[in-house]
Amino acid sequence: MVHNRTAKENTMIAFVRGIISEFTDSSVILDTGSIGYEINMPARIIEELHIGEERKIHTYFQVREDAMQLYGFLRKDDLEMFKMLLTVNGVGPKAALGILSGSTADNLRFAVLSDDIKTISKIPGIGRKTAQKLILELKDKLNLEDAFEMKLAHEQGVVNDTTLNVGPLRDGYKEAVEALVALGYSSTDAMRAVRAVKDIDPSDVEAILKAALKNF
Image (cartoon, rainbow, N blue to C red; front, side, top):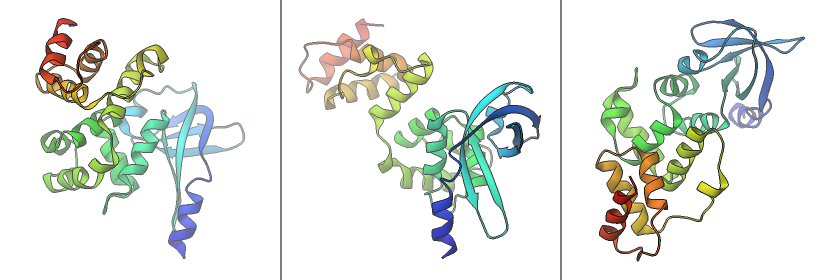
């Protein structure tokens, strides 16, 4: 009964907007004018904040029998990744927050999709077994093309419709992107180079790769 109630109340506070008034190592105090909310946040995000600035923080509201806590992120995408991490057996809010303190949502998605146990294991507090569990339980919930386009949108600051909204990549083009990343090109550069390839049979991966390499 408590579990069901908690699940409903997690969406009770979708975001909080206010002035950053205080910091701790793992949380900020957000002054909304009449209430100061303590919001637990990843350490790497806290480092981006400054006392006195106004911020909108997307939140996850956790309700337990002994406590109510807010977890927050500057980007809604990070919040969604946080929620996804909570679906992994044995990963609670504090562990999920720790994972996102050691990795961006973008990097974590690519590490999961590429079965990169080594990279995930480098996150403080995450061992090899936990890394394997994350990959096993999250890989089917993620999509490679979505991951590339999300990263590109974040690097541009906004979603550029002329760059991103050009339809899904077909199989051969996806394989070409993966091959370029394996060769050492950044995921963003690989996506741009392959997107620029036109009029090649999507089943001819080799031809797509040769054309994409000319775009660098």
